[in-house]
Length: 157
Image (cartoon, rainbow, N blue to C red):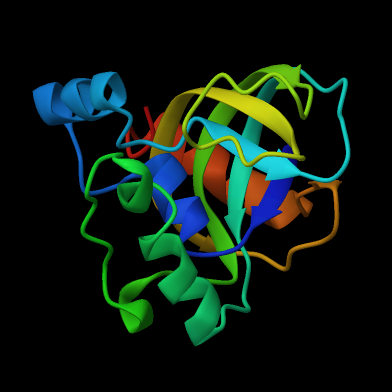
């Protein structure tokens, strides 16, 4: 299983574990779920990938996440407190269905000058501790087994 490490609170903004059912559908429609992962590099990868919340997060990164959308007229999103964000493990899964060029901004989440991995069908999972890595990486067998068991038990959609 492939995973991609994403710093908090950006990883939380992708999986949005606080939203279910109709509230989740409304949040998708209004842009309250992050649908682009910005990177300096392009990818040809398409498909399901696990969202790994990086272990490190600075106060500045947390504060920066509060600003970019709402300062441009985007939705106001109440982030969890910094110490409430899970870090150092798998927190969800998402499908990458495209890689957008830096000049083709298709979402308010797409930062100018970056490639944008277009994300669809983001789903939170129960937290599973896992060491991250750069770029896409294969999760260890024990983590994959734990996630499969959760899926079989119905804990993961």
